[in-house]
Structures are given as C-alpha cells and as structure tokens.
Length: 297
Length: 322
Ligand SMILES: Nc1ncnc2c1ncn2[C@@H]1O[C@H](COP(=O)(O)OP(=O)(O)O)[C@@H](O)[C@H]1O
Ligand SMILES: [Mg+2]
Image 1: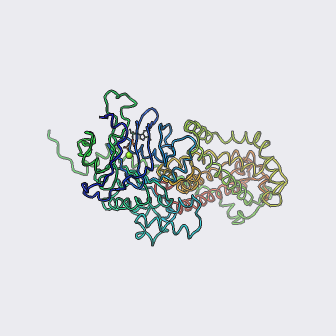
Image 2: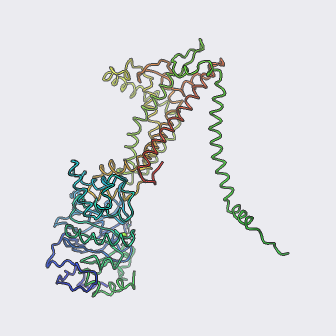
Image 3: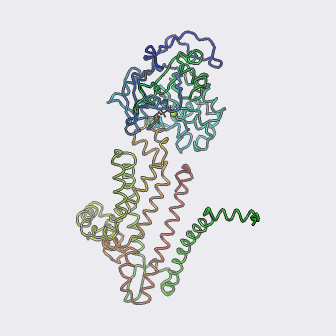
C-alpha cells in the first residue's frame, strides 16, 4: 500500500554500494548523478482507461533504470510515453510533465520528431527494416542529412562496433538484415538506434524474444552503452534487472479497495523506486518484496 | 451382437469423411481444375474458330493496319496499339493516384474518416462500367477530357504522342475513363497492403526521428512494394479487358495514329462494336482472332508482371508476397 512518504519519489541514497548483489558490480556510483529525464505527476489514458496514475520518476544520466512489475501494470506505456511513441495510439492522452533536460516533452508545441531523435527506442521484437544491414544502420543518419558515403561508412562501422555486431557482419554489410539471427537482429536494431546518437535509449524487454546467450550479449552491451547514453529498460526478468541496472522502479496496479472503480482499478503506479541494490535486498514495501521473491505477479 | 473391430484405414477414412476433409479437398481440387479447364477451353475455342483467318493473314494480322471488311483485309495493329496505349497510360496515372489515396486512407486520414471513406472507394469499384461510360460521354468528356487534351496538344503538340487535331472522343478519353475505373480497385488494394504492414515497422522508423512522410516513403512503400505491384497487375488486367465504357468514349476509329489524342479502337471495343455487323465468315473470324490476341497479350502481361512481383518479393519479407 502507498504510504504518504512514498507519494513522492525517494531520492535514492547514492552512497558507495557494497557488492551485495552478486553480479551487480558496476552500479553507477557517481555521488550525485544528474537527472536526464524527470517524470512529474504523469497520468496516462487509453480512452477512458487510466493506464498510469501519478507517476513520478527521475531518470539519471548515464545510468540504467529498470522498470519492473507484473504484466499489464503499464511499464511499456510509461516507457513509450518517454519518446511519445504512444501518440500513435488513437484516443490516448497524457497529463502531467515529462522533462528532458528540463524541457517538457508533453508541451503542446514541442517537436515530436526532435524528441524521438533524442530519445531512441529498441523494441521487444527485433524489427529491422527489410533492407541491407548497412542501410538499416544508415537509415537514421540519412534522415539527418548525412549522405556522403565515407561519413556513412564511418557511422555504420562505429555503430556496429558499439553494438558488438561488427565482427559478425563486417563481411556481409549488404546482405539483408532479416537474414541475421534474432539476437543479431536485435543488436542491429541497437546499432540502428545509436547511429543517430540519441541521448536516451529506451528498451522494452529487448531480450525477451532471445536465447540466453544473446540475452547475455545484450546485457553486456548495455553496460558499455551506459558510458555514452542514458538507458531505461523494461524487463520482466528479475535477475536481469538486478544484474544490469543501477536503479529500479517497481510498478504495480492501483489495488486500493476504495479506488476500485472501473477507470482506476488497473491504473499502474510506481510502488517503489530506488537504487537497484536497495530494491532487491531491502525493499521498503511489502508488495515489492512479494513481487521480487516471486510471491506475486 | 458384438461389433467386429474396424480396420484402421477404414476408421481413418470414416473420420475424414465425417470431418469433411475428403469432401472439402475434393471440392477445392475440382474448383481449381474447373478454372484451369475453362482457361484452356477458351484458348482452344478461340484457336479453333480462327483457322481461316490465321491461314489467310498469318502474322501480318499483327502488323497490318488495314481493316477493310469490303476487301476482306484485316490487320489488328491499331487496336493492339490502342489497347496497350490506353491501358498503360491509365495505369501510369492510376497507380500513383491510387497509392496516394491508399496512403491517405491508411495513414493520414483522421480515424473516424477512414472507414466511411474506405467504403465509398470500395463502392466506386462496384459501379457498372456502362454507368461510367454514360457519365464519361456526357460529363467527363466535354468538361474535363477535352480541355485537358487541348492543353496537352497546345503545350506538347510537337511530340507525336500529343499530335492534333483534338476531337472529343479519343484514346486519351478512354485512358482517363479507365483511370477512374481502376482507381478504386488500386486504392482499396494498396490500402490493404499498407494496413498489412506490421506496426513495428512504423514505430522503428518514427523512433529514429523519421517524419510521417519519411516513414511512408522510405519504409512503408518499399516494404509493401511487391503487394503494390500486385495491385497494379490487377488494375492493368481490368483496363485491358474493359469494353463498354471504352467503346463509348474512344471514338471507334481504325487509324493507326501514334497520338493519344486521336480517336481509336481497343481490341475489346472493336469486337463489341463490330461483332453484330460481321456477317462474312472471314470478318467474324478476324474479330475472334482479335479476341485471341487479346487473350494472349493479357496472359503475357500477367506473366511478366508476376515475374516482376516475384523478383521484388524475394527482397521483401515473406508476409507480404503477393
Ligand atoms: N494500445 C493500447 N490501447 C488500449 N489499451 C492499452 C494499449 N496498450 C496497453 N493498454 C492497456 O494499458 C495497460 C498497461 O499496458 P502495458 O503498458 O502494455 O503494460 P506492461 O508493459 O506493463 O505489460 C494494460 O491494461 C493494457 O491493456
Ligand atoms: Mg510491455
């Protein structure tokens, strides 16, 4: 249940963390990380259905923030609100503010194309274009007006290296991206995303359709990407969140009996947010504990 | 009385009969065989009924522009030219237009407008051609086709394609009426092609900072290209065979003039127009041979177009192969 003190976000206490969490050795220990994106009082509606309620969340620069929670609690909705991908859903509507470097991306006169350029996205299922590997990666830069062959070559190589795919595909850049394996396709999609040098990368269960080895590669990749990008990842995999993220937000539905009317019954909320280590070793909320120990969801 | 156990094959067979498997299979096979048989029978009939004409004119039937019932000399070149010119010109206009309408219907129109507008487009595809012909003759031709033809002649008259003089009825008029007639089919089918493209492709493009237009032109159209070409084939098929509306506006003239502004004939319209007058055996056979040629041209164009679609489809994902 929500206690009043949790209504606003806990500012995570960023002390130097012990390696209590097994693999989580790489937690960003910057004493006071800067806030890259800030979500304030966000409500989100699909028609009359309220999918998110009173979301407050800070996304720290060059950190990996994981969103976890039971299926249907609004993780994807929240993630897709961050680059306004939900604009595509007819009759959807957002209230509140989402600040990107202090600027409200939900403001009416904002340039959505620009936002999406700065906040890139990797999807749950790899979705390369039916074009060559090269053209997949070069697609974004070309949109930005990069047309010189040598410039494009450099960007393509750099992006494929950064997504740990270069060695596997350097000999066949002009073959179809669809000919790659699922894991390679997903890394191709990551390469395509970082080719436009976004500031934030959103990932919606990027490894859920992949085998364990590909999953491991993607997680490893995220650690490298964190140096340059801010990452927000949705995952249903507790281990993945614990291993790979610096901060974790646990989301769940609004379950309070008093609020159980048709429109609010399933509105997703953030139950608890904090350093990943704290969430997983010392959760403050019973619901969080139940979820991460597998008693719920 | 005790039942003797049935052998396995009998059991399987009865089950298949009960579940309709066998019957269903037989029916579908029969249906496809009927189509094939009809196709072969038509070709055979046309071939049989043109023996005299084929023997008399040989290949010159395809290359001669002489069509003289009195002298009993027949050459189909002007009508072949008319059919190809009007159909291709109509396709040239209708494909981009139809694709544009499809893009509007599938991607740009406000959601509440999409369904009703879609119905109207589909409805237009169902209007009988004679209605198009009447409308074309009395409204379209004087008010739009003729002024446009005059403009083309005035501006591009130095090209053989747009040579004068400008009459009302012409191959140009036929092309424009065909454009309107195949437009609904092409729009509706292209819309379906666009709607079949997974949303993840749209999202991928937009997430990279593509504008809507960039998404449509660089991602959706390449993705759906083989399907779009497939709809073009269907449109072309309809244009090649369209008879009554064309006959009403094309001017029914046997000259072999390169100009699209000249009155002409198509293969379908010469048959429709002259069949009743063809009392001589050879005249009748010549008309049937025109039908034979049309049959083969349609076949050849379809095969060609199908090959084109295949070569494109090999480069695009399997879901959308036409
Ligand atoms: N496009 C949509 N239209 C209507 N409702 C949606 C749409 N997408 C998600 N929802 C609803 O919003 C809620 C949250 O969904 P989602 O964000 O996908 O959850 P999660 O990713 O946590 O599983 C669910 O109840 C779901 O049914
Ligand atoms: Mg989801």
